[in-house]
Length: 498
Image (tube, rainbow, N blue to C red):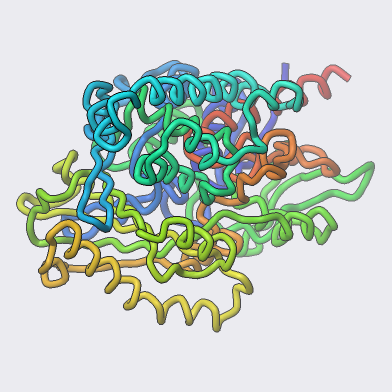
C-alpha cells in the first residue's frame, strides 16, 4: 500500500511527535523549521557553561512521555534520558514570610495542609484528590485518546465551574486555596476563570510528582527527533515558511509550502505545527475562519529573565512560586486588563539545584517567569513599551527575592542576563499576541469547542500543537501528535481505497 509524503511546518513537540509516528508507518516526512534548533518553545539558552530552559522546565504526566517513546519502539531509558524527580515539587513563598512545601510525599503533604487547615483537613485533601483524579482519568480516556468528542461525558468534568471554585469546596484557608489553584497558569489562565476540569493538574503533581530531564527539557524533544531521524524523518532548519500552497482545482487542497526564500516544496499531506492563529492568518488565504480565530481569547504572555549567578542559592528549591499578596487582583490585571500587575506572582526555576550540568560548579542557572498580559495591538510602540518596563519588573522580582528569601545581594551576583517579553515571544516563535500557551482554555475554547486537527475546508491540511485539540502543554501536544498521525493515515488509506 502506498504511503504519503508529508511536510510538517514547525519542530515543536507536536510536530516532532507527529513526524516520528508517520515515518514509522512508512511516510516520507520532512520537517521545516524557522529556527536553527528543534523543540520550538522547548528550547534552551546556553552561555559560558550555563543552561536555561526557555520554555517548560518540568515534566508533568510522565506516562504520556513514556507512551510516546514506547509507541516508537524505544524507551526513555534506551534513549539515554535521565529523569530526575524533584522533591519537594515546589516551595511556595508568601508575603508574610510563610513558606509551603508542596510534595508528592503524602505524609509531608498532610503535615503542610494540616498546618493551615487544621487536624480534620486530611480527609478533605483526599476527597479533593479523588475528584481531580476522576477528571484526569476522564481526560485521558475521552480527550487525549480521541479526536472526535461528545459533550455528554464532559458534563461529568464540571467545565462550567472554576478551578478556584472547586478547590474552595475542599480547602477553607486562603493560603491553601492559593497553593492548590496557582497551577492554572500552566494553561495560561486565571484560576478564577479556568474550567474546574483543570484541577486535575494538582492531582497529577501530587500522585506522579514533577520531574526534570538531565540536560534540560529540550533533551526530550531532541531524543524524539533523533528517533524520527532513524525512521527517515528529514529536518530542514533555518527555513521560515512564507505560505501554504493551496490548489484551487477540483476542490481546495493543500499541496505544499513556499519558503521565505521563494523555494517551493510539495507533498501529499501538510501538517502545521506553527501557532494556529498565525497559520490561519499568515500562511493561508484570507478567510472568515482566520478572523474568527483572531477573536478567540488567548492565553497570557510573560516577561522571563535568564540569569547566570556567580554563587549557589541554597535558599531556593528547583521550583519556586512567589505568590502575590493581592492574589485575585494580580490575575485580573493579566487576564482582564492584559497588563502587568502592580504586584505579580512569579515562578523561579533553578535547574542547577537538581541538575549540576545546568551551571558551572559553585554557580546557579536561574530562570524567572513573570506572567503578564498578551499583546493587544502588536504595534512597534507596544513592543517598545514592554521593553521599557523590563527594568521595573526586574526590580520588583529582585526586591521580592530579597524580602522573602533573604537574597539581598542577588543583583550583584548576576553575571549575565537575557530576557523575553511578549513582543519577543511573538517575533521569535510567531506566537499570535505573544501568547505563550496559544489560545485560552476558557469554556468555549476547550473539548469539542477547541479548533479541530483537520482543516474543515482545505483537504490534506492538518494541525497539531497548543491551540488545536486536545490543548496546550508538552504532554498534551505529544498526545495530539498521536491522534493526528492516526487521523492522517486513516484518511490517506481510505482515499487510496476509493
